[in-house]
Amino acid sequence: MPVVLFVDYPHTKLYAPLIDHKFQDKYDLLVVPGGAKGADTISKNANVQELVRQYYEKKLVGMICAGSLAAKTSGLPKQPLTSHPSVKKQLEKDFEYSEESVVISGNGNLVTSRGPGTAFPFALALVEILCGTKKRTEVQNPMVFPPGTPF
Amino acid sequence: MPVVLFVDYPHTKLYAPLIDHKFQDKYDLLVVPGGAKGADTISKNANVQELVRQYYEKKLVGMICAGSLAAKTSGLPKQPLTSHPSVKKQLEKDFEYSEESVVISGNGNLVTSRGPGTAFPFALALVEILCGTKKRTEVQNPMVFPPGTPF
Image (tube, rainbow over all chains, first blue to last red; front, side, top):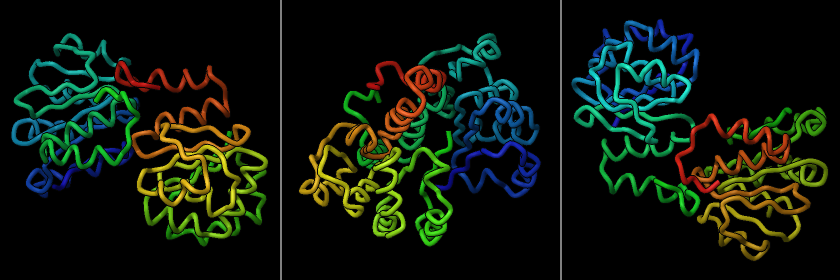
């Protein structure tokens, strides 16, 4: 189940060849992370925007923290979405803004989340979509979340 | 507030020079992470054991997941402690084993925790000990933990 995570914002120039090499045939999931300046740079990158559109249309795309800005810059249709509160104002006109920790929208092909504190439920939701509930449980249980954890 | 995290178990040979260079004068916190084979290798390393004893006596030491094995291999005194459930049997005779997500023991100089799912409350407890409640809140709030998160 190959997946990819964009993390290193100075290296956005590397994203172009990924498109040339049929990136979307190789990986089942594209994740756009947050990180203020990094998310800003990634979301403004035309190659990233093209990949986001491709993954939204054909596969699965996740965005967390300020990474949700990529939904706007890539021109995804208006739908439920969440993000880090620091970029809420940039998104609430173009989307049905939610403050849920994890929002699954589109046809289940867009998963957005809020910040480092929601990274676990975000990741586990992606695992569940890609591999099913049984695999999610298999991954989650040995992580020993505190009793009462709300996911 | 310099801290250090041992992560790369094939590199345990690098730990020896750290002692020679008065490692404990430079860093305020030593953290022993988990990771099954990694934790096993780290906890059996004599240099790590010496550092653990030094940090336990003079500063602050954290152990998470199977990293708690280092408390035993370093000969720390019997006291409350937790770990990943997978190594509970190796620790429960020598310590007052707890299933709390984060256990602060000694004179507040040993902090142990259970697994990836308790990494956030573990890290935040260390921040609070080192930098105070105000700093903990300052770090924790923008992370946007889900409502109802039990820490």
